Image (cartoon, rainbow, N blue to C red; front, side):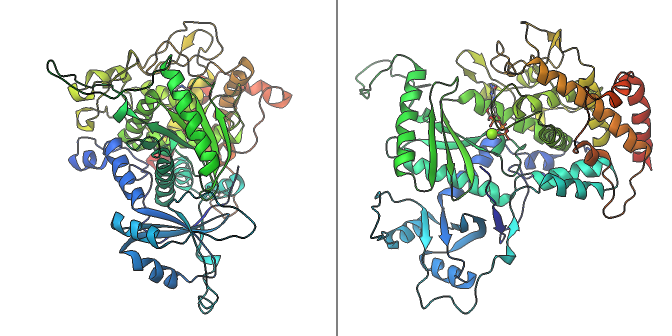
Length: 549
Ligand code: GTP
Ligand code: MG
C-alpha cells in the first residue's frame, strides 16, 4: 500500500517526535538543557494528542487558493498551524487554537447530498471543502509547492549519499532523509484522534495512542501506524476499594479471559471502522493472532494502520526504545542505517514470514551498542536499578520497570564515530555465535540459548519469549553473509576515497545499499573466508585516520 504523500509545509519543520537533532558526534549528557530536551514520551504524546484534538483533516479541491482556504476556515476561529499534502488528492491538516473552533466548524458543515448513493450518517473531523462555481478561479493553488512526504527512492538515496564526504555524514544524511517529519507525526496523531472518535461511541473514556516506530524515534516515512486502544481508565486495575460503608459499582458483563475481552472489543470496533469510518478501507480483523488486531488502510493519510488493544507491554517497549534513542544521537542514526541496509537486501520485509523484523533488528543494534567498550548505552537491568517508585510497572507478572528520569542515567564516554560503529556492527554479527548464544539487552551480555532455534533474542519484558522465533536458518545465514560482505565493502571504501564529484560512484554506505553478492557466488566466496577480525582492524585504523583529518 504505497501512497505518494506530498506536503506543502507551512509549519516550523522539526525532526522526530522527541525533537532531537541528528548529530555526528556524541556530547556530554549531564547538561540540564539536554535533559529538558529529552522529554518523557508520555509528556510528548499528551501534547501531540491535545494538538490533534484541535485539528481537522480537510480534503480540498486543487482549485482553492490557499488565501481563500485560510480566509474561509478562519471564520470558525484562530488557526494555529496548517499544512497541505497530497494523498489521493490534496488534503490539509488545520490545527485551531481552541476546540470550540472545531465545534463551530462542524456545526456549520453540511451533510453531503449525493443522488445516486446513500450516506452513513457518521460525522467526523474529516471534511471536504467544496469549491462553489464563483470561487477560486483567479489565483489557483498549484501542486508545485508540495514537497515529497515519503522517503526518497533507494536509487536517489544512493546518489545522494555518494556525494557525502564521510561514512559518518552518509549515515546522518540517511537519517535526515528517512526520519518522520513534523507534519507526518502530526498526521499520525490526528488519525489516532479520528479513530478515537469512533471508539468513543462505545467507550467515551478511551484513548487511542500510537506506538511502535511512529513514536519510538526509529520510524521511517511510510512506516505503518501502530495504534493501541487504551481502556485502562475503565479497566478496574489499580482501583482502591473503600474499607467500609456502602459503595456502588458498575454491573459489567464478564468473559472467560482478558484475551476474549480484547477480541470482542476489537471485533466491534473493527466493524465500526469498516462500516462507519470515513476513509477507512480494506478492514481485516486478525483476532486470532498472538496479539489480536484490526488492520486497515486510512486512505486520506495513506497510512497502513494496525489497531490493537490491551497491548501494554508493546507500549513499554516503545518507551524503552524511545529512551535509548534519546540517550545518544548515534543510536537513532545507527538504527536508521542498519534498517535501511536490511530493507535494501530484503533482510526485512513488510510481509510476515521467516524474516528478521525491524523490531528485532533494532534490539540487535542496541545489544551491539551495549557491548562496546566502554558501553554506549546501559543495560536494561541497569535502567531498572535506577528506577524510582513512580517508575514501577508490572504487567501480567512481567517486570517492566525502568528509570524515566534521564538525568539519573550516567553515560560512559565513548566517542566512536558512526562509520566506525556501522562497520563494527557488521563485524560483530558476522562472527556472533548465533548457534549457542542468545541476544539479551536486559543483561547486556550474550546468554546461553534456552532453546534450539536459529536466532534467539530475548524479549526485554516477557523474558521467557524469543522476539525472533519466526526467523529460520536460511534467513539468519543470509544476514550473516551480508554482514561479512558489508565489512568487505566498507573496507574498500576506506581505501578508495570518495571522488566527491556529483554523480560519484556509490561508495561507503551507498555501496552497501546496492545489490551485494553473498555466498552462492563463487567470485566472492574466498574473501568471505578471510578472518573478519584482520580485515576490520585495518579498516578501523583507516576510518580513525579519516576522522582525525
Ligand atoms: P516498523 O513498523 O517496521 O517501522 O517498526 P515497528 O517498531 O513499528 O514494528 P512493528 O510495527 O512490527 O511493531 C510495533 C511494535 O510492537 C514494536 O515497536 C514493538 O514495540 C512491538 N513488537 C513488535 N514485534 C514484537 C515482538 O515480536 N515481540 C514483542 N514483545 N513486541 C513486538
Ligand atoms: Mg510499526
